Image 1 (cartoon, rainbow, N blue to C red):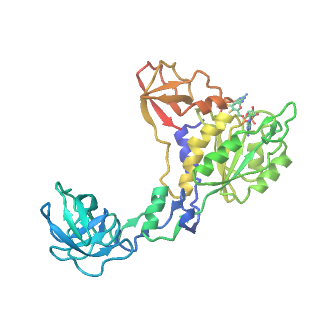
Image 2: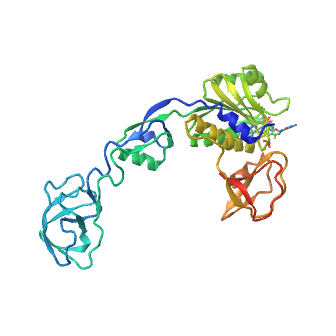
Image 3: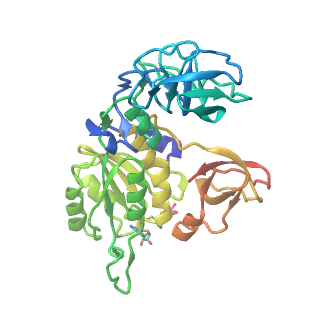
Length: 390
Ligand SMILES: Nc1nc2c(c(=O)[nH]1)N[C@H]1C(S)=C(S)[C@@H](COP(=O)(O)OP(=O)(O)OC[C@H]3O[C@@H](n4cnc5c(N)ncnc54)[C@H](O)[C@@H]3O)O[C@H]1N2
Ligand code: MOO
């Protein structure tokens, strides 16, 4: 059995960059920018007022000074002349500051009578002028690759980008296998259970920037599995679930081999997730996940997410870990790296007693995985352990 790190390296080596496409900004959130974007002009493109008030040319006017109001600058409609010493221009937030003005007096600090203002006692000191380019300069660039957030989308809009070039979402065919499985919403037979982890993986990968597709559930026959593999043949990644172990009905490895799988590895020294396999199947990368629901979800986080990152051109590697103090002692670990379902609360982490890889409810109660290296000794309360936030 290879280590988790070796398995991840081999999986990342299967990654092929997806092509690029142009999308409107309304579809940019969560996508990965593939080409840098340059600002069309600085922002703000002119000195602009940060407040509603009066623009004046005097840097230090005394309280009680009177100014005639000679015009108005509104957002979208500038005052077209300069303001001189002893004059004021009515101005609103976001409006261009007229030439000659050196500060804006907020209207709360003035008394207005007709076309004259008088300054009150205790003036604010800020100028309330946003200088040209104070948000970003004319040549400002957002570099690629970058996974775009809603804040990035707002910035890109401000830079004048209507369309951007992003990586196509990697297509993932999710292939659940097993005679016992029915889709939720369908009446199960007495010996059947609901297919679950394929839905969990669909959600995980969609949220991570992939384009997953649930294939029909394959039955435990060569014919059914082959048909489902055919349906996934054009995917960037084929993700099988179950049928990976040593039972008489665990056919995924054999069928994939018959179809020409160039296998990179089978079996990893980890828990859960031991019977993991991966390789290249024609144009697709293939990962065969173990069927136990928690095993499949944990392997989705540890291996599939980084592979999607790599296909999107993002830096890809192990999911970050933090050292967190244990809330209680834990026993020594066995020979496989153990990803233990755990709960991070305050500054410490509690490792759940029940770690069976069939327990989805325990997984939903977890917000972290405590990573126990192979043969790690017992740990006391307060000792730190590497922890992955979920
Ligand atoms: N003699 C041995 N038995 C097992 C070994 C072993 O080394 N020797 N490994 C165990 C480990 S570890 C795992 S993990 C499982 C993995 O088995 P498979 O990948 O072959 O998965 P299945 O047998 O098809 O299913 C296991 C379990 O998970 C349920 N399942 C499968 N798919 C789904 C799904 N989409 N949604 C919900 N539940 C699913 C399935 O009903 C089984 O209960 O093998 C151990 N056995
Ligand atoms: O190692 Mo298997 O992946 O359930 O528990």
